[in-house]
Length: 81
Image (cartoon, rainbow, N blue to C red; front, side):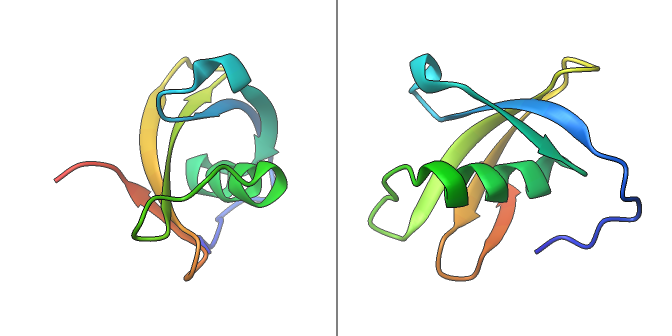
């Protein structure tokens, strides 16, 4: 899990990649923290590699990130090559 440098939390909108209809509001200290909380709480179906791709949007700044959450190792990394 990502080590946060601050305990200040922000609000994020998160949904499993390709499924924006099931968007959730999550509080977290950063994008990775919020992505991990989303996957733990709502348990979207992982792919064959045990990963879930999620879109994370910071509600304050509008900044978006696609993160792949590895369910086996409980970590999140940016999507893509």
